[in-house]
Image 1: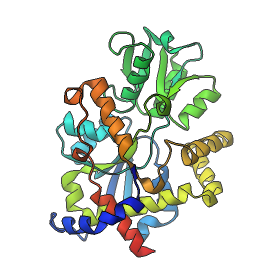
Image 2: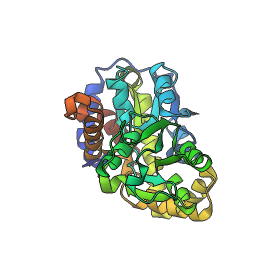
Image 3: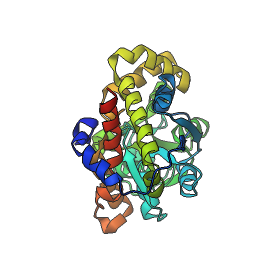
Image 4: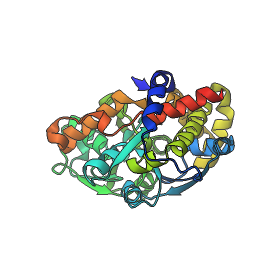
Length: 334
């Protein structure tokens, strides 16, 4: 079940009542520093284009990081308010770095594929090869390990993993260094790679099923101290995502994707069709995919041995009250 605005509005009033016991608001604060990986998230570009941040009285500064470890370090050190990244990174911050982080909203599923060099003919051909990831123990690296395990290859035994950086960096690295045999890539990088002759050996949707990938998370204390600011931001992003997914916006969305991603027109069209119309792409109302997140936890338990091999409870990492409050704001503003 995806926890969209339609399903959470029933608990919005209760969430609002609970929020009154939180640390007092800071009404003069209107700025948010959002930490992202390379490039600007399409929802952020859209919210700026449509004036949605201004509508909610916000100033949003986005800051890129080269890889997820750098981003997690920034958030942990307080050099940023909110992160947009694969939410397994939030789990890692809680369980490995012992940071009190909470996921507050979803955004995207995963359409990652295992993309390999043209000469690789099967997953078994990756034995003894170097495979590249962002970080070796979170998110898409765990997807990679699972797909290889299904193909009979074990991590730390049958292949080497090397940390290189975010998705666009990994595609560049595979172009420049043929010894980098494969990586997990998603649109548009996976589409570009296949146009260039790289080979796909399985998708997350096929091998793992629904997967809650990118979402928004913050330190719990910051989220509680800035509840009004945060829910205003989430409401703006929900509106932006609605516009992105609306068929009537297709032409303008394609123009944004081409400009922001520096994409060829045909790649932009394929990316749009994949991300906006197929499972694992942008979620309606930026909904949090609870079954997809349970798969994230299941994968971490299986591949990394976390929690003694038994997945932790989702509510340890996700608080739906912020999303419910954002949905309630949009209901009022209609």
